[in-house]
Structure formats: C-alpha cells, structure tokens
Image 1 (cartoon, helix red, strand yellow):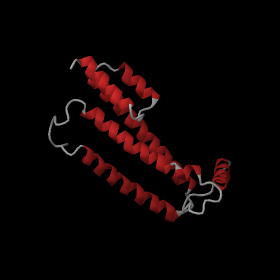
Image 2 (tube, helix red, strand yellow):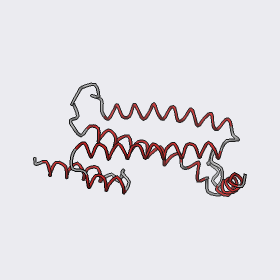
Image 3 (cartoon, one colour):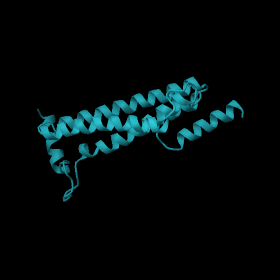
Image 4 (cartoon, one colour):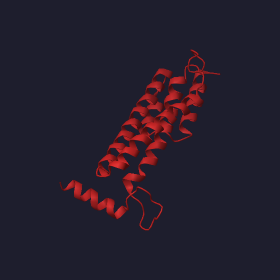
Length: 157
C-alpha cells in the first residue's frame, strides 16, 4: 500500500467518528507524517482535558453549597478515571509489547482517550445546564430556572 493511500485511510478513519474539533481536522489535513498526526491527536486530547476540567470546576462552583454533592462528584470522578483507564487497557491490551500496534499507536491511543473524555464531558454537562421544569427524576440536577438565578447571583458578587 502506498504511503499516500495509507495516510488517507488513517485520516478517513479518524474523521469517521467526528471526535476531533474543526481545528484538529485542519491539523490532520495539513499533517504529512505520522509524527505530525500524532501531534494533532495529542493537541486534541489536551484540549478535551481542558474542557473536562472547565466543566468539572463549573459544576463545583454551581454546587459549592452542597457538600454531600461535591463529595459524591469527587468519588464519581475518581471512579470514572479508573474506568476510563480500564477501558483504554481493554482497547489496547498489549501496551507492554513494544511496536505491537505500530506507528499509529500514539495517534490511535489519543483518539480513544479523546472519545472517552468527550463522553464524560457530555455526561457532566447535565449539571451545568440544569434540568427541565417538572423533571421529577432529576436527582441532584437543579432546575434550569434555579440554575439561571444562581448563576446570576454568583456573577453579581
């Protein structure tokens, strides 16, 4: 298989799941070498981790008066981190075997981590948006109207 065809297949595979941002897609389109594609994937992972931390900190700020919730949030985040790592090892069980996955491994591993982190971000955002009115199964999510008022009061301080 030619290098161009191989690279085209890799780029098509990456874009097929819409995991990467438009900036990352541009990065991949410009990348010529595997090293450059690895760097694009690493940058995207870094961006997704920043987003995860931003959402997590926003939740902590919104719910800062609810100590029980914050304790449960920390426990859930620790458990998710362990689950994420275990899922990653399930996807790539031969991590300790050098070159088992080839030169695309760094890119693919970052892509997998982006996917797992993106799913977590989407899940956590529930607590930054609030629940719809009348949702009796909302659990710890505050109603949207209350959240809007809370955020308004916090910004006025």
